[in-house]
Image 1 (cartoon, rainbow, N blue to C red):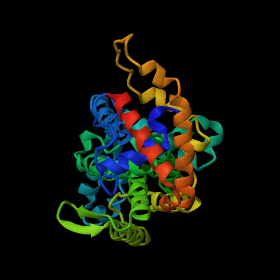
Image 2: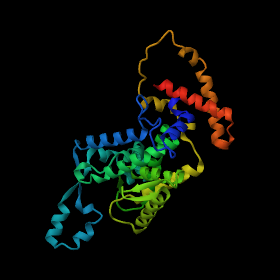
Image 3: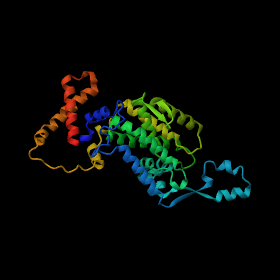
Image 4: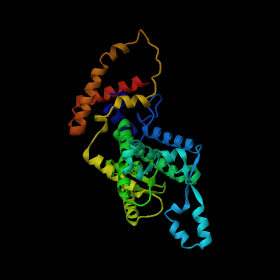
Length: 344
């Protein structure tokens, strides 16, 4: 596995980044260190949002709006006909293609167009287009993802965070589709909120007593924020709220986080971690070789020591920190210093 994926490096990130593992450490702020995965996800979403704004708009009839009936009941006949002929912007072409359309994936249409299954993933990287005026959709999702995601990524690892996030988006989309497939309208969903909800709830499981500032004002423990979020989503889902928020996807994300936490699954154990890491890993800087240096001699035993450190970390995870002998602690400390020196 890649150097940045070793368990002892993640332990060092927590140790030097603070008691809760929320600080810098090896998290990507050091020169030459890999960029945080959550930062890459936010950049990708922002780039797609910008590209979408340059694609042609997509319109829909106002008569298909969920609130159309209430509006029509208050209009005279001539105005009602005018309303029915009006169109409103439903977004732009790129995000319309990326959106998850329930009738495309969760009906018999999937047998004639099986490629539409891609929507279960792409919808999580699309948001309300700029043309709709709902800029807060992407801003709020990305702000929460970046703030909470950094903490979660430090806890579970860079590549594991990527797999968890992508799987959460797919699971949330499936939950949304199954709960809405019986509806009369072709419901559509875009947004990262299902994946974001999963990240927030996972933090509530991993570090329940970690204090966070809700909206930068109220200080609450992570578990209280998780319970509050799930409770609000559950109530609104039962009310069948017409505010165009996919509460079912939020609940799907929360369920996925709970399943992930209690099952103790690790995606990196059976996924192509090395191949994925190589896509996001920056190229190493060139170094000048000093023939008088004893670095080559030291590196002959580097892999052997790395394997030993992995074994000690496995013991730490299985039996706890108290199980480590004084010799094992010194080995970890000594090797972590070698790793930091090798990176500089």
